[in-house]
Image 1 (cartoon, rainbow, N blue to C red):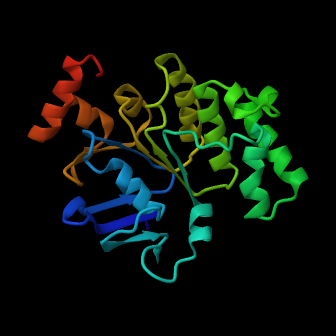
Image 2 (cartoon, rainbow, N blue to C red):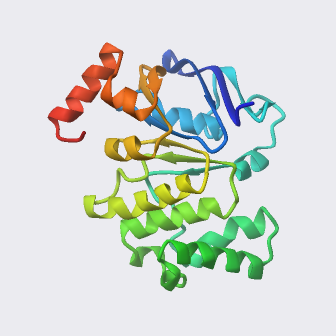
Length: 247
């Protein structure tokens, strides 16, 4: 059984359909990269999986259990499904350590001592233990994004959603964030990433999904999608990236 099953979902904003009958299964430990032009539905799809957006039709399941519709414990759902956005969304009045301790102590019920040990371990892994008592405005964008990832990991999610996490960063800061994602992938974290970093997607993904007009137009291993795309729209999209020097 797949960890995540997205079954024929649709998402409307009024008369405008953002996601149109999309289905996708994600296996445990799999890394899926969503690519495609702006407005194709990548971010909306991630937000629907985390229930930050409500789907208009279809169903989403985790380990076979429905997570859409009425009667779902959203607090429990968001413990299991972490999400990191392109904006870091750190609390500016809290230190790095306090930002990472808030959810596990209040939601998971960890003691402050236990949560602190766990947080410092994560911060040490990403090279930011020395910034534990710093405030977000003293950090670079790349450092803030790394802290945002740690904050999500503190909840021990079974699935991590990453929504264009490098798009707001200066180019020289992108690699330090992507290094963390590489480590997570190597460690078996199940992830779905919406990204414009095609070289990184080629390297880290088990499967590439090219979205067009709110649906998966083509999917497959990176070598196939990037090296031998079958669909005309996929070919056109990748060709435009090559002309722009982004592939």
